[in-house]
Length: 265
Image: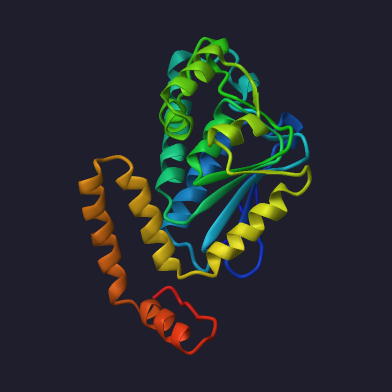
């Protein structure tokens, strides 16, 4: 895919199959403005429709201070109700496009993640965060509430009671606390979070890409229903892999004691 044309995102390949996407407004702690909302929606839509060779994405923030400080409140200052709702509808579409993206997306949280920034990380498949990083869903301090699937994704990660405490108090917590609650998969040393996320992304990209996408889809949608229905979905996803070239290659490579050459077919 074409890696140019975004004003607020920096895209760089990390090897043949991994893409690093950076929220690139470090002067405002990578806050999400309307332009970034458009760029993110376009990125996730394009990766869904035409991923090309990309098999895994690492999402991080430019600079050393922030992953994302949330919505750009300076841009929002003085917005009419109509303009606010229109902007938020754009953001909503972006959050949904990220969650619906068939490629695995790892959040490498390299600095503060507040409000919509934390919600963006929560919309990714899992989170690595730098030690000492501060996180919060702080919207109730602003007279609003989480609107980027935060009231849905946070309780699924940490449980209903913990999520209520965090959202209703709007209090800040650390990456280490988030790890203890199951929100953060790995706490990394400062400066190493992107390296660690890329190591995992490369491990994912070595596996059969169709298998990875089908497994992600099965987990994501199966978690939204009862286990029996989820299992039926799993089997439908599984059966679509039986006729693939990658399934034949995987079994052949195992028996020949060599690394498989998966082609995504």
